[in-house]
Image (tube, rainbow, N blue to C red; front, top):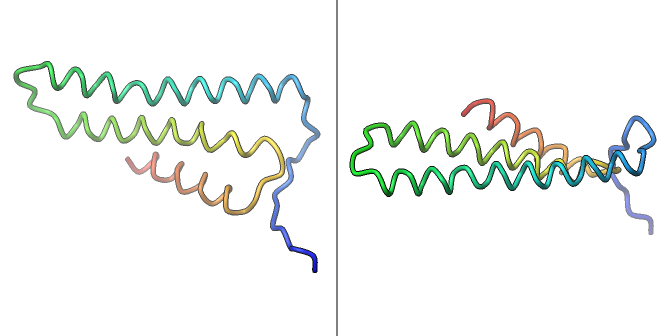
Length: 98
């Protein structure tokens, strides 16, 4: 019995080197985004008085969601399932809302 796949194919044939560079850059961008909240937490912990912690928490959530979209994007360089497209859409909409 054949399994059905609701795959989404890329609209153009991938250039191997270009795809490698995009893949590597998305990994590095995601890591950079994920390091920012760690630095913010360190800064808030070291400051004796910081009145806008909730603003920092929102900013941290925004940064993590931005990093997540780059991380999820790693699965979109080739044919991917509809589930990956839905997860990417939810991450991007959540990022926009925050």
